[in-house]
Length: 276
View 1 (cartoon, rainbow, N blue to C red):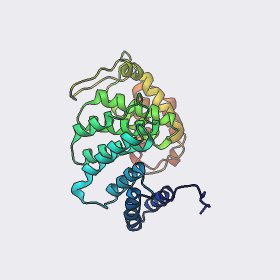
View 2 (cartoon, rainbow, N blue to C red):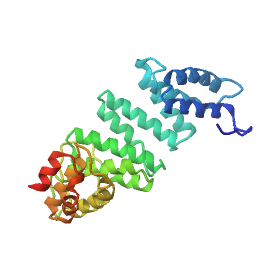
View 3 (cartoon, rainbow, N blue to C red):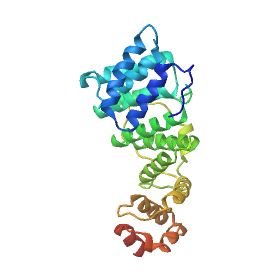
View 4 (cartoon, rainbow, N blue to C red):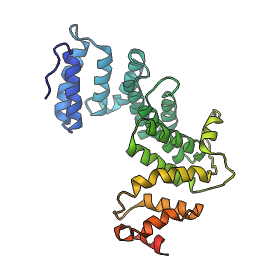
């Protein structure tokens, strides 16, 4: 362990240790340490409202409080961080956690309302904005509201590109492509245009939109260098989506690459599609 600067407040140093314990899966030790840190964050010597909120948020997430109190506690943390560290990574994370809690309780409208509090205009970081829009897109998709879902998914991929979150960008591209292939129309507006011209709605509905083939081409060509690194695995839905896109757009150069590498492919459905 590196030597800690003597000027570093010990509460902050010990909170970093708490996070390492959580990262290593040492939940029991983390709960024990969090009990101590919570008391210290409220004490005269080390009082710190910002870290009190961070500690309480971690405790709510690791089962250190009664289950019935989790939602109320996460709301308190989001409100406190909004006051003490507004639009920061920590504030955004608190909102993400609160929204996830609502989603898990099947309170989808409350989850969407919480995600709406995360905003680029307010200054939330790209990482937080991307994760928020990804989850919003998934909620809207589950409700059959595909038009805003695809917009949110597109915004998510753009934010993940900004923040160099490659795995998350891969996921958002694949989930967007899965929706986009349902209806393709060369006359459809592209996603950037849809985002610019989007208007607020009072409530979600059941919506469907056509996707522009140029957007599909952009996403597939973004996916290929990552997906094609390793073609092994018996359940490769990602490769299947690229094959579907290739057939729909009649861009056979994508599948030609796969045909040349048939010996690397293990998914029987992908092999069947390529050999048919």
